[in-house]
Image (cartoon, rainbow, N blue to C red; front, side, top):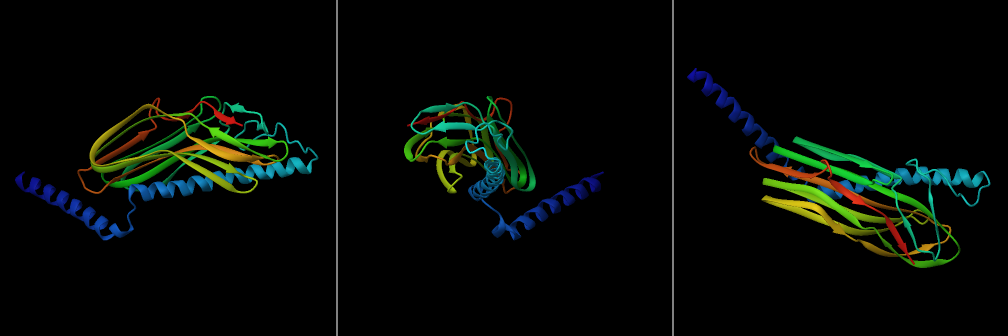
Amino acid sequence: MKRALILMFTIALLITQNWGVVFASSSEHRLGVNEMLDLAESEIRQSVNRYVAQYMERLQNTIDSGDATILGRTEPGGGIEEDVYLGQSQDLYSADSGDCGISSSAGFYTGASTYNLGSAQQAKAKGTCAGIGQGTHWAWIGEFFQVQGTGSQLCSINVPVNLYGDMSTFQGTAAVRAQLVIKDITENLEYTEIIEDYSISSTGSKTFNGNSYSPTKDVYLRGGHSYLVYVSIATSVDCGFGWSTGKSDFYGTGFGIVYSRIRLIF
């Protein structure tokens, strides 16, 4: 019995050491939590661009069919496109497009992401590591609209949001990043506002219990141009030791980033 226990302990020690060797030898290739969030941002933009390509294809098909106003066109996400009239303030109350995904994972990592459209719009993401592991998940939701009119006018675009989530670490690192992005599809221009960018290193915890934010960006809207306004969330965790843990959970029941409306104020 004693020999069996010694053998089991030796095997466990070798496994632990081997994990350490693997990650130590590849440490120069490992990403930090902020680098993983940057990678997630890149993948979010790739996802958005796929939706934009679908949107532009439908726009061109509608124009080719002779409907110059393109009112009531179906969006890539399945909703009906909103129309905004230059100089007239307006609120948009739903999200009709969105996507989610995973950017990276290694070792002992689990995570998930999802999104809800319609009037209960929210984007969710989470990641957990226990032992040696790391990873990133992301999600975004937003609304397409076209501006009717001629010329251009300065517009304050305001998107009140609430953030719900829970973060904790023990000798690990956890992070979350949320952003507001306004995209002029016609000219391929982007305007970005950071909503939250928070991380925990070593040992600690942080709860977001419906934290309120009101990001605003002033943008010149142009008649005849199409736009996409969206909010995104990405989480990342990194554990470098066998006993370390990390959690960035903006996915559980009632968790995520939620917005009630997009306010266009001329």
